[in-house]
Length: 157
Length: 128
Image (cartoon, rainbow over all chains, first blue to last red; front, side, top):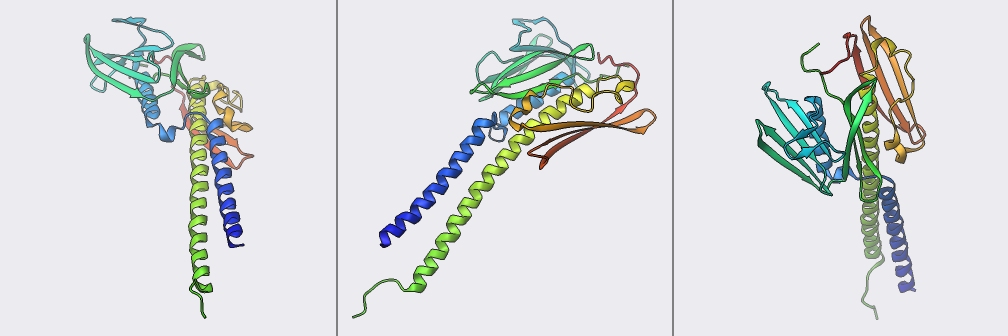
């Protein structure tokens, strides 16, 4: 009798754990990349947003890079007033590369790993085609990032 | 002859301790899942809010009042929150200032996210 009661209690406990685990996996299936456990996704978005805010133009080409849905080239103005060229390269699956160049020399090369597949395209707001739309698809094909960034004014009127 | 074993009190105390441990573990597990889900939902909602803000900050100042009272931007990112509602209100702060408030509600209105934007009438709209 004692054994039966113990097994019954244990069975109830296991049943509850199984239910909660199934519920948790259900949420994970429904919701895209969990940014709480992928801080590099947030880092990519915040650095990219800042670069677009500070941009003054999008050159068609720079050194070996060309504007594509996986490559964004921007001329950005620095807080010092100087300008540098930033290349965002998303061609490597699961990685985001940010390379900054000043007077033709690479001044920084930052890499984020474990990120979803990013793509970038032009975005027009009110007939102004100077914005970009950044999207990312996670490993299960779900849209996990969809952000529109537009440059900010740089002192001109 | 008295047999060796546990007294009723000992068994009850053990059961109480076991119950507390199991209940606490389950509560922590459930709360963790709930908060993680809420955090993910909030991140999705704020992505959509910031997209809408980018568009509303570029609409001609004089047309802000007549623009749609729901989101103009693509809200595909909000798919996991379906069903959801979006609202946009525009209020005059001063003759050349308007407050634009964007709201998303989901889970039958139990959850919401809000972003406010103040627009100034600056004339032109060229950024570069």
